[in-house]
Image (cartoon, rainbow, N blue to C red; front, side):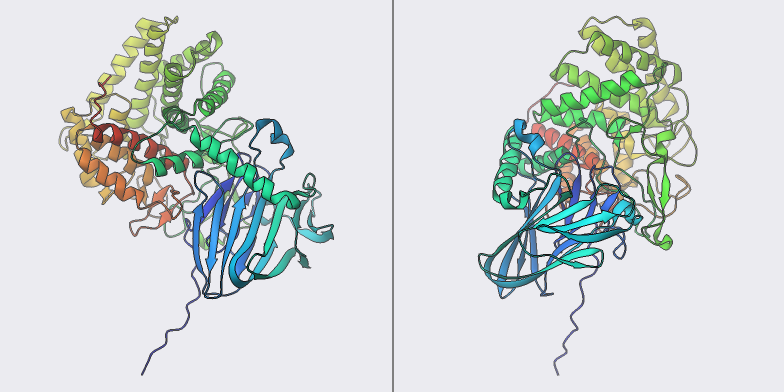
Length: 612
């Protein structure tokens, strides 16, 4: 007797079952079900318009889905672009859904292209019925709205009187309560187009959809062609660069850590933070990656943004850890009660880490200034005055305890990585002063640099486990130590470094995954067990390559590439069971990937770069 299993309804998609589209103003995630289920509007750090990714019932989505439940789905980017193509296939037909945020291929026309999402559906073969549903939920689903018919579309009018959002289409739309919907009974050759954006400025845009599509493809292809990277990882490096570009702000030049908030870093649903801000720490990685790939314009705009933060910092040179895209202070942290039930962990917007002391950010700042001086343009007189003020601040404060790179929320302590980056601050300032013959209190800076160097070797070395440790006198390992050879603090083959590299491989590694620190929940005072931290795995691969263990490093790198999603995007963390955790996609992971790819190329091509 044959046993027929029931048709199981598809489970909720994993976090990374999505591609991303963007226009350097905002970004959206498009799921494998054809739904835009996460989008902040009008800016990447504005409240959500769609957040079904976080809350299926209340978050809101804009979906274009085949009625047949057994449709096969493939999703890809059009080559060298951020135009996303989702293909639905059934026995009866093949359908293509193109998703993009339009851009002008010529900078002079940029103002004429509105901030909007364009969705084009075409039936390539056969026949298919698709259901279109647009269900916006304004202000993190806290503000109600009504839908009303307007010419060629539906306008969603907010109860609080803020700017309405309009959906225009070249097919009839119906109003269904606060939502809009349409049914597409398509045969081969049929095409529908939907545009969603601010009510002003969308006039007749749907009639120009083909021209907008072509312009946008041209924009991205031209941008991609400027990459100077010709190594063996071209596809993944270019996809990482294209992703970073979408996370950057056209208006301000800053790069946000991720386009999302509230995606849990632990499988029990806890550890949900807001990453729609710019961390000074990621600046150095970003500038390094952009310069490496030949994107000097982007690096320059980010350096300008950083210079402004440096100019605005307190009179004694102290910087914030993170800022909003426009350079103002990041929002204070508040709990959102409108999305996600409490059992699954609180969802917060804003970030409390803005109040923390993280001394490592100064090293990141100075490293980016140093790199930009080397490959970009010389620092200005005023710029150098701000730099000096910041270095003097570090000279005064480097011994103090802080919250560190992992933003511990249970108090400050003396941390290896923070100490290391304080050394970088003073070291890069000295190199710069020497190279450019700039005025500086050389003697004081030299003395401090030597003192920090001594302090790290004496206080943070554990002779029993032959490794550098997270805090003095402890046996706790910390994967951020992987930065030691990467920032040129220690030789990549120094016996003490090899001991540390081996200890990290022994204690913090599960296959290619590297956990941030010796696991044990009391360490960071937070619930839930987090996954492996993807950026650390790429740092580990790079450190292995630099230590001469190139094949080992390459295998870790290639194994990590397999954790990218179907369109090459990476989340912040990966669970031991292999699923994506944390905010997605994550800039830091893509930055660490680019850096490791460069190092592996050099080593595999046997290009010897002298260690400086």
